[in-house]
Amino acid sequence: MGTIENLALAGTGAVTEKRIERRPLHEEVIDQLRDRIVLGELAPGARLNERVLCEQLGISRTPLREAIKMLATEGLVELLPNRGAIVTPLKAARIADTLAVMGALESLAGELACANASESDLAEIRALHFEMLAHHARRELAAYFRYNQFIHMKIIEAAGNPVLTNTYRQLNANVRRARYMANLSQKRWDAAVGEHEEILAALVSRDAPRLKRLLAEHLAHKVVSVMAALASNDVAAA
Image 1 (cartoon, rainbow, N blue to C red):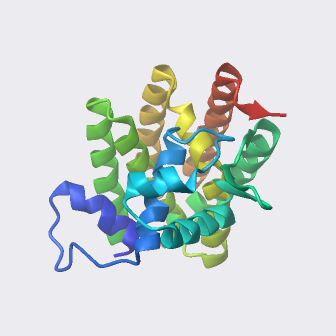
Image 2: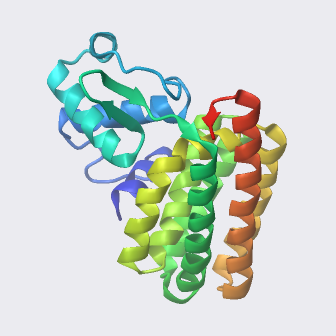
């Protein structure tokens, strides 16, 4: 079982032999900063004040700077020559283009997953789905979004194509904040849950044509919602 699944299933009562693993400090910092960016606590265009962040996180500048460099490779942070770093501004046109490509990748992954996913893969995706539903019922958006992302990534991995997986992971890092914004609409959030029910049913039945269509439609709906969220929040550049 991979890192994603270990993290997700930790909340389902699953017991693992090594629940807590020591990680380099900068990796912990990366996770915390990434979450702050995705959840909007660090807004697009905001300057990353090293002194303030070090105080908040209780760390020195060395692991913070390592984390910022890694987040820059993900596209979440921009490094400005002699001026530190800022949270990457959201650019509507680029996000729309990226999501369009991701929709095609998810559609292909769905087709491949129907053929290549193991029964263990399906069981893990089903468990993640039910955990996601529980967070939706409790209106826990941040936790819901984590499991939503776990599910999409697990379907991608179940396709069995490493090139597809790596390409999707890189693109998703650049639009994770925008994808989170789509769920800020209660109507869209509820609709997305219904779509995930259909996606799971198609995957379990290994209905490739239906799953391809559902995944493409799911991403298309998200694009519409993301663009509306960007417009209403006035945080995106052209």
